[in-house]
Length: 98
View 1: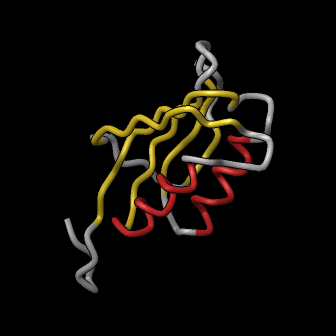
View 2: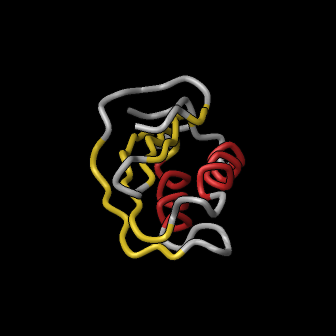
């Protein structure tokens, strides 16, 4: 899919692992995503990871994935798993833990 300006639109489902809970990761990810005009959601998982769905301009999605590789200052990211997303959300929200 492309926008009216020809930019590619894509969605990705991220699973961020490491020391990523209790460090403001979700709050910072919402800020980083909305600054890039992305749509989606983010939530903590019971296994200690953070999961996020991001949808928008392909270049902006790639920037957010890069940001997720290091996250906020106190995060210790060990891995970012990326998969294609099929769900297309509206806005960007924090969901309850899952």
